Image (cartoon, rainbow, N blue to C red; front, side, top):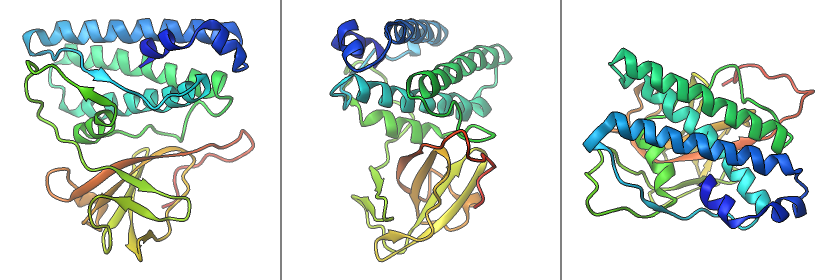
Length: 247
């Protein structure tokens, strides 16, 4: 995404959007890091590595690009964190960990220096499952090479939650639950009359999924996740306490 958008928006575009020249320069450096990550992981996977897909991002100007980049970098942090428990080779744990910490630095810089917001959400980052990460990425994929091997993941239907709690998806939501994940904490909230009841406004970035299971400890991608994740982004200022989510 970063490389494509840098090709789309010039230094003059960044200046016109009110950003100093070093913002585009740093984003260019991040794009270089991302390219190196791909090369590193592709080398580790060898013949099992997939070829690049074609993507389209909902970016119309520099400000929408930097806003989306902040969210996607946070998803990257959640993806590596969620995958950590599946890595069995100690050497790969170190490789993934070194990428994870760099992704976190990218997101923190974009969120604070560029977006003038917070560099974090809460006391812990939020892990995501493979299927949840793929569901987010799939929304941007337009085409993949036919020679790519089938991936052992699935994309869930899209999920949206409006400010008034209205839940929208292509699957039936009535009588179901919204599970909210923030850091290492998760809880569920019932849907009644098409609206989630008591949907928490967690500080920073949290994720929500639609599920048929009320007990958050029993939620599984294989059995009861129905749609999502929905990325909930609540900006908070420096004068606001930042405790763990009070679910």
